[in-house]
Image (tube, rainbow, N blue to C red; front, side):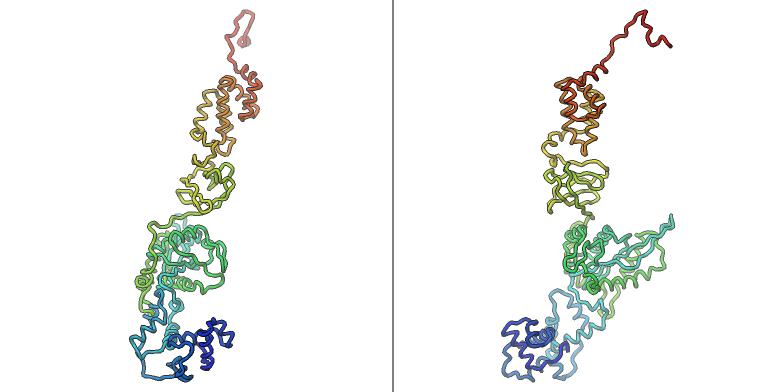
Length: 512
């Protein structure tokens, strides 16, 4: 019996407190001094046979005990055997309970076992199967994932170097369907890629993925509020499952995958121990063959293979895969610089200028950079591999910068070349001194427009003087022109007339 036999008076007290006063099991336990589990057991037994409170007068204590314990009180002819494998398989389906299965059983066998004996016999049968089969998980509900402790060496034929490959393992809770794959590391990229391949092989998406607290998946192990890696959470949102990390030091939370890891090590890796692999692709081909044999093998106590259970139990209730597989992306928190750009891999990407000094999130893929602020996408750029350069969207510029959006550094240099080499040098120095070339456009345009007031010759001389003394700014050049400090440089650069020719002038060639 799952609970210790109580006197019928105690049972009547339990029923009265439950149905008359509506007390909880814990309150009834405290009031009667009976364990909460025992209280729940007798409330359940009475509910199955339809007895509440008050107990009908014609049911005395002996009759009440006989009804609550029909097997213990009655000895009848032997009953037909029950297919417990079928019962166990049905228990994995959603919303199916032992009460429902017992009612269906009694509908077919009116003289069959009572509910309590039915539960006890099922419990005894479950003890005869392995631990991983014994667990009851709802169909399509959970996928357990982890890495095996053992690695497999892959050899490079050119260098004869050895590199260990890590084995990713996944197992569905209901069908025990197992997936395994070799990856070069346990890092984030390999962790995400293995999930994508596992879901594609299974052909559907479970409601929950249970993982260990490895760094690639969980950033903050916690019993109550674990922190999930942003990329891993992005993967979960793409496929529509929830990530449920196992509690720290609670191996039973992921017992299913631990047993699956053990099975993979024994029936897959052990079979491959004497083989020599020269590429990850070759190793994964061998692993797929072994795992396929494992999933096709009929489990003795269950009477079906993992592959059969996948097709009949899990796959019909798994959610459909999205139209496109997840595309790997990393996330990075950035602070917007005063030039309204964020730095990602030594390249600078613009965001709206109103977000200067705000913190944003960047979603980084192989080809694109998406920037989000408070969950909303504010910018998207093609990814660039050119270091220390800027990618700028015109709409992101402040109004002062946007006026010069049609200008480019090449066009600015071309305009300066019409005045002279000193102007070219000064314009180039201004743009190089700025974090972003466009930030120097305003000063450069201001200098070029001084030509209208002072002429090209004086402006060229002023730029010459500014370059010599390091005064490379619009204000400096304007001050030089305003105070006439450019005239000395203009006289130095003025072209000389025809040389004077006279008999008394020897010239520089005299001494040669």
